[in-house]
Length: 362
Image (tube, rainbow, N blue to C red; front, side):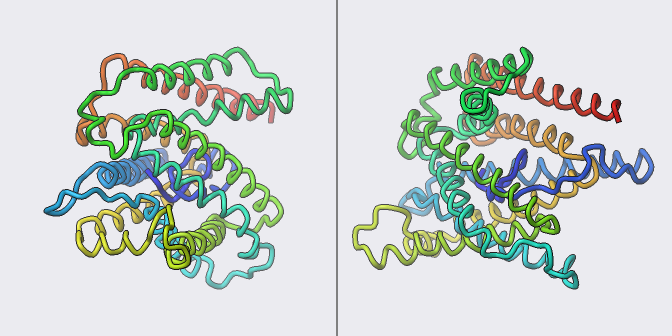
């Protein structure tokens, strides 16, 4: 799913940095009240992002209109997401931060550089759906820990424990076996241009750009500590809207053979097929709403709880895709899926154990 993005552990298709309170949460309210709020957060994150995934897959595989045409302009989803999230974050800032001083908050021009990678990365992730199935894309994007560990070991000499290497082995092994196993002919027929190597390459480039985006956003947050998530969301999506508008609406006017996404053709397709326009709007709205639940989860229960919820959500997205959207997986492919999420589950447990150790020392 493209989405509002995506900071660490979130769904979101726009790389938004999540707030960083203490991982133990605020601890307020009765146990029953906290359980109710947690259930509300889980339901909100799951429903928003799973439905967004269904819409993303529908837009990439379905044929529309009497001529049974595909919506080929998937990069337009990123532009639409930028616009909706920009408006959403502007409204939220006015509602919750209307009277606060801008002092200590990052100015909007600070986001112009990192917004380049935040524009390119999600576009690559969405474009990958032309070449690989949605479950394959979810698994590929779940393997973010692999390049992180490789970069840490090769460039910085970081030492990892055996359980951390075991996590990486499970994720890498599951991802590799899934990629090598034969995809069903029914799934292949739904893809616009089946090309597994290109699709997986786009997914891993998406991860690389997301990694740079996340680290740069963290740097901006540390230099301007009063910057809140809505400020970051506003700045990122403002520049993302400008960049995508230039790429899809200005460049085609300047170059007659513009080879990339054409915004005019995307708008014309939506005019001819209103169903597509509504799907795009709901897709963008899901990303914006999902981010609200992510912010609420982290502020009340901490980032580790949010990571757990979003990881299980990815698994459920694959299940829903296979059941509803008609992407059947073979038993061996399901085994690969289990391997990947077993590795991610162990990683979550190790983080939880480390957090408990820190709390005990305090």
